[in-house]
Amino acid sequence: MAIADPKAALPAAPAAPAGAPLAGALPAAVSPARAIVMMVGSVAFFAVMDALVKDLGARYPTLQVMFFRSFFAFVPILFLILHGGSLKALRVNSISGHLLRSLVGIGAMFCFFHAYVRMPLADVVAISFAAPVFVVALSVPLLGEKVGPRRWAAVLVGFIGVVIMIRPGAGLLTSVALVPLIGTLFFALAMIVLRRLGRTETSASVAFTFTLACTVVSGLALPFVWVAPDLVDLAALIAVGLLGGVGQILMTAAFKHGDVAVIAPFEYTAMIWATLLGFVFWSEVPGLNIWIGVAVVMASGLFILFREANLRLPRGRARRLQVKR
Image (cartoon, rainbow, N blue to C red):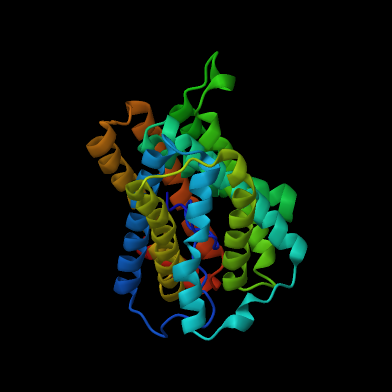
């Protein structure tokens, strides 16, 4: 799932780490159209990565897949940073903040990777779309932010969409649907931490430390969970990391050179990819409850996105955008 996602260790879009730039390493000017293409391409890379994770997860432990995802993501990420001559951007000012972001990010990645194997791909992606709803709800107690009645209404609508998707019943506590839901909560917490880190840390340092932490943690577990892959699976495991790294770079570039309110909604194209890949390779067809629930959650997320974008604009410009919409 591209939904910044632990996959993209950058600030958040509708339901995925959004892309503040890897400082100094990106081209200076990209048109909005190209930014949209980059965002759609990023989502596609992440979707293929998720499909590989789902396939590999049936034969290899989740922690082993996470190790390859993190370790080989360093290749494109470091290339971009070194190419831009921005090693100073890796400086860490808040060690505790990076540790907390890495902890919740690793938890989110584990939950999503674990769920891909046990649920239809599109179902996991659909549930992950609830991340911005959790972010708004958590920003009040954790950040002390003020949320108006309109955004609270959107949060309530978003939670209704989640309930529709997971269909709570007598067996809810044993339902595998709780795994991606917990992962989405972890991801929302990561976004909350990123809001604080954004005041003192660069996107490059956040991306680097998260990827390093995930590599170290999953690497420490390797001696206990290792399953020797054949050459084909080894290539697929390496591809997971490379696809994730390239997807992260594309998302970073898209958000650097495009307006968030314009670029972020294209992350919802992840549902198209997840449905297509799930059907082609695993004959998965999302149930009616998933389609209804994801429509409700997407509507809620888009309202929150545009509302927050308007709140950050000068009052006159915000009014003009509201009139245009």
